[in-house]
Image (cartoon, rainbow, N blue to C red; front, side):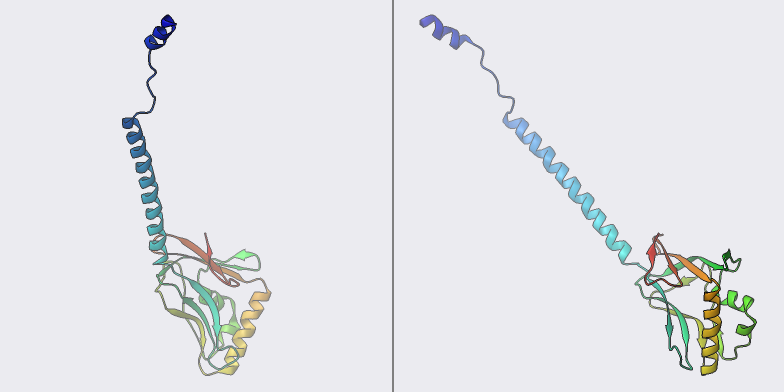
Length: 188
């Protein structure tokens, strides 16, 4: 029996794979990776906040329909400026060379030219629309007759296939599109 005990004592002892230094080193690596992930996530959140802090939100709408003071308005209801990149007008299936809605109506409608109390504003590529501003694309001043005639002219163009879209960008280069029938801008 003594021989058996001696052989057990003489057998080499196996060293543990994990020692204190390896555990501390691995812990440091895990903590460093977690910190890097947290910093990346915080950076992502800050970028999102930055983009939202300059978000333009364009919309088209009527004000004062069937009144002597009608307006067809382009509004920037966002908190950042909008840069008009393109205005694309399609009529009867063909894309127009004109990139401004008011100019398109003036060029293509003799009836529009005969309206007496209608004023217009141009909206064209390269234009800046500040946050909180409104642009009356068409505005009737004190004339229910001109309001009714303007509605008739616009409706006849829509029935004949008039569509248009405005592509605009934020100060950070994000792009959106609105059309004559949009309820909200579509991010591109």
